[in-house]
Amino acid sequence: MKIGILTSGGDCPGLNAVIRGAVLKGIAIHGHEFVGFLDGWRGVVEGDIIDIPRSMVRGIAKQGGTILGTSRTNPFENGGGPEVIKAHMDRLGIDAIIAIGGEGTLAAAKRLTDVGLKIVGVPKTVDNDLDATDYTFGFDTAVQIATEAIDRLRTTGESHHRCMIAEVMGRHVGWIALHAGMAAGAHAILIPEQKVSIEQITEWVQEAHDRGRAPLIVVAEGFVPDHMESPHSERGLDTFGRPRLGGIADRLAPEIEARTGIETRATILGHIQRGGVPSAFDRVLATRLGMAAIDSVVEGYWGTMVALKGTDIEHVSFDKALGQLKTVPQNRYDEAAVLFG
Ligand code: F6P
View 1 (cartoon, protein in one colour):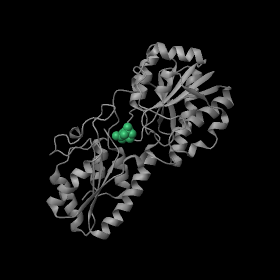
View 2: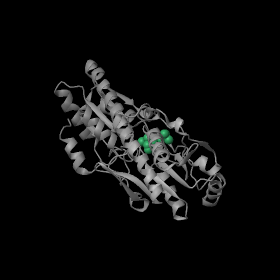
View 3: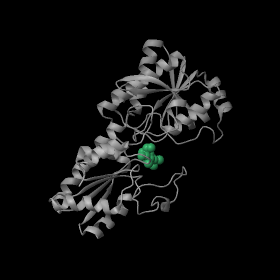
View 4: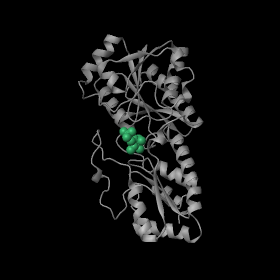
């Protein structure tokens, strides 16, 4: 078989390990041929591909980013659609597609499989918000990067007796904030799933300060304090029509400073959390998912994605996998909150 691979949506440490796992298993066990669509669905819509020989995946499991490039192109727009894509696949002799992406990518893959295209999915997001898989690769790396950064903020905060706020990724969910915050011993963790009042936040800050600590707050970018309407909409929409995030820490810092009198600084970690080498956990998970995607293709499990369940990799239908995000449950937040203040 000739298999086309694409990486779509925001990049994520581990994408190259998926590609390598799929290509090595596909060639070694089944004698498949591989091509890569460049820049996600753009390459599919335009039939823009490169060959992926075995030599191309040598040593790439530890490389950040994606060797295929990525984009947020919608395959149903920009001159795309099932007929156009099918015509490219026929012309290029591509039998099946492995789509590596998040909720948006997999939703598009589902629509295309619904009309007969042969596609299997591999879930990807640093946010860890895909419901049908226990973890997504990239998340562990992002948490590690965020934790290291927060540890650094702690020592400078302690030296100046300041309150430090670290803003981490998490548009809809607070998994990175929860894990990095717990790992780094934050005095407050603020996530989109939880409404928290400014009074509660300042209480936690004051408590930590009164014990002689430099208060440390970890806030997910999508958090909205209950006294602010929607600080994000004020910044307009980005190129993809999403509210422009980034900056909630900047909004909170002067308010905390004014209410407590404690000098406060904000740091936005941003895309640093998505760059660079994947952790060993993410490399292993991504490699296993890539290899399992080959099983999906061989078995003809079209319209499914591979998923981590416990320590096993399973095949889950797009129907079951998509539609609801995996949010931080109340008990996980309550557990972390025991340590606040
Ligand atoms: O979905 C992953 C994510 O990293 C979000 O946490 C973040 O809001 C978004 O992507 C950033 O997207 P972009 O790279 O397009 O700015």
